[in-house]
Image (cartoon, rainbow, N blue to C red; front, side, top):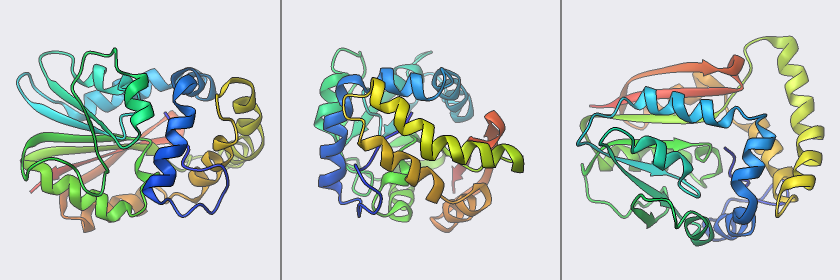
Length: 233
């Protein structure tokens, strides 16, 4: 679900700092995500796989894959899914999951041009130092006609709920993380990073500006999460 990029708001998202933070949350990462999402993380992963629509024999890249829980789901039905993360601790925590894994930065992927049929990034784009550079890099490694899916926290569509949700992020979420996470201080930044992230239309514009076509989005859980889908032209 959530890559917590730093222990405090204002961290400048230097890759080495972010990777070190991921290393420290890796031990209880999956449990923490399930608790903080109220168990919705599995349904968000299913929706992401459906939006990607990969076919048997295709190869897809799961960026910011963490412990590769999402990669295993993407690999169902004869799809080859590669887990990519720049946290060695995360990759080690998911070592038993039967998918190929590669260490790599979203802004400089260790793949050749036009080498995959699709790219997915779930709850990781907002923690990249330069999200626009990452979107361009995803475009580089995707074959023409391939698909991008960005699953990310977004802005709830109903204003009264949006207010309640923001209050949860800033108060309840850090308290819950203290009870279940191996590094609860990291999740203070999580709340700030979600609140600062652009809404659905603004992110769609950035995806299009990075060279992707047919950009559209789908709200999940009332807009708490949005799936942005685009085509490599």
